[in-house]
Length: 338
Image (cartoon, rainbow, N blue to C red; front, side, top):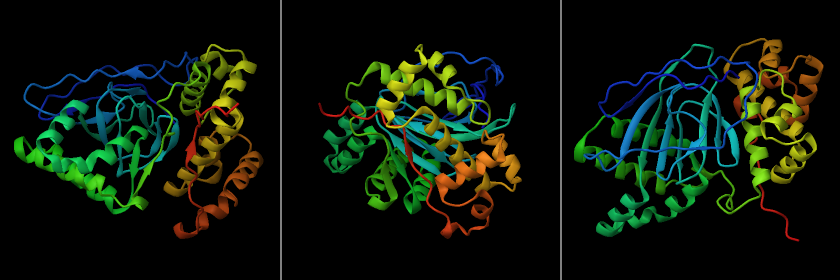
């Protein structure tokens, strides 16, 4: 997976594109992974909520959090996303709502220099605004359960996802009272989603205080692996990025996630291989290389262990025959009771 740092443009309402210079190339010496950055979203004096589209890579993309609720649509590309302590994959039509202060990021598989135009459609609104609306319009209290659950991040699927994607485009391309009407229809749609078409992804207790060392280890490990999934990944480098010795890093990582660092790397690489097998006609050898495997025997063995079949047989299966993709949660588990 190729990860580019943040250049590109965004469009908010009818505003002009923002452009920044392309930043560093991949495969340089790794730098310490920063903690999730706090995004500051300035209010607009003539708008009660914010709606925009932006490219990937873009300056406003990145691992971060903000106090606003965010409804997020991916319109194109495949890649990996992180919401709180949850890591999984996405494709076009991926719809989610992220609660306040929950770290998140969507990283597309793009080639160096490639820009996915208008990859994201984003709607953001504050807690104060939606609560003020509820005071004036009591019917909006039907949103309470969804807003509460969104603090874990909710990912939608099925008919709810594609209907929400259509509604989000209407929000983006309308103005005034009509835009507000489309937003309320979108919120009603998401709040009424059947249970089989919505999934809360981050740990329930994520917002509770956790061990700082465990959190630092997981955040550094996640970013290092995702940025080097097709290349070499070393425990020693991950530990260095977390400013820890290897034994200390391994201890904290296992405590937080319930798995070893090497096992997490294996799961993410197999997930990458499955996505390439599903979405491309690359030869198996190329799939292995782009998933970080230089040895075909090792690739076949690990894929069989995780998926239950070989890469070649997996590609021949009909979609209905393929085992479901594992939803990989990188724990940050609640400590065991003493």
